[in-house]
Image 1: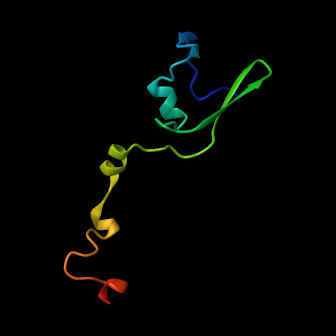
Image 2: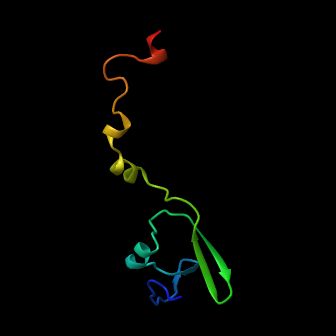
Image 3: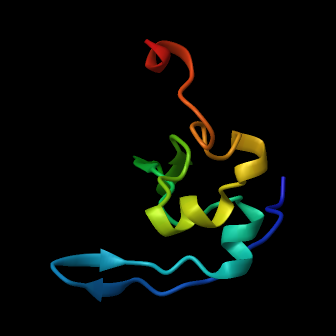
Length: 86
């Protein structure tokens, strides 16, 4: 089975460790996003990277995708509701 996308990268020094940049075409092909948690496993002949959860969005990213129409907007725009009516 041949890979859908294959690139060659160079491992570089990054702080106290080593790092490899994941290029945009590779990230798109693998459905990766910034903040996405991964696991790295040492296997025979290399490494295996696996996505282990959903991306953790920053506040600005959350606000960018927030839709007031979908979430109902302001809850107390006119008068108290629910237990606040006491």
